[in-house]
Image (cartoon, rainbow, N blue to C red; front, side, top):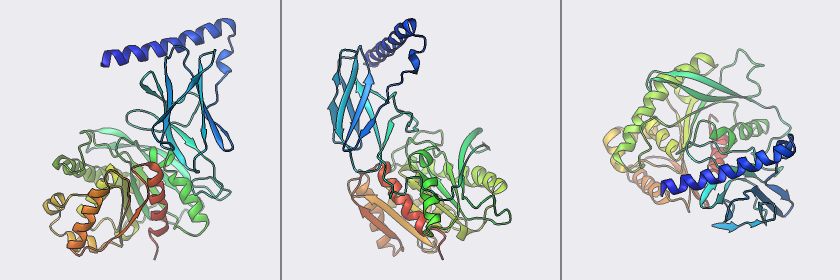
Length: 373
């Protein structure tokens, strides 16, 4: 089956290459004719892709149920028109002869460890993810040495708009961890953490802060969150964060280095890593936020004998999950465990599933609360 898929993909790529060569033979500037996709036409959107050798092409995305077949014209271009969804940022892709393919006409790619989907952004001037005419912070790409993992790693850091104009001012730090299969770029490019914070700071709804976005993959696979192996991976992350990432950040940025000025949060895998880290380091983090994630009672009992005291000492323990999330029942079980132990927390259940549309909502609410007096 794998060979069959590889042969199909090779055929598609060869067809595209031959089409390009034929076009260039007649017109050396043919490569300038980029096919724009998607095209938003008010209440509808047109998706297009050139696949002259394909026998079937369809569109699938998180703004729709299932997939929809696309139609081929006499030039080998497949297209489909669908209704415009509610404003948001949605992953989508084409399925060409059974193979998932990103939209070659769209420069907005979802950064991921595995398949790279495309992103459909439906504009909304009132949406927090929309860039507004406000002071804008900066995104810094960093490379640091990880002695824990024995390699150099990438790290993204956001500094608020006022950071450079106030060289004598230090800032609280929010460690925002990537989700399962996501890279360190996802909270920036898909979660739009920088734009959310720019807009919330400008409106007085959030405190100016530094946001650190690390890569959560620890080079030892991604075990299921309910398995004992997940806790072992979380332990490695705690070491990576406290022994490699935090020393780098605190040496290169003007941070306030105390418990009440450090927060940690994450989505999916990152949420589990954040909970495990905060409970492992009760003197280091004063704020904990978890999006679509949980720890099992077995893990908490095994690793955190002082969980009641440590959890109740947090300035905030907040959990956010969608009622259609495949981890919803596990999060509810985690909440029930907290209730039984008289652990103080806040939680929000809302319509939504295990998507970045939900994660972005959770992040915006975290930013409104963190480091507030």
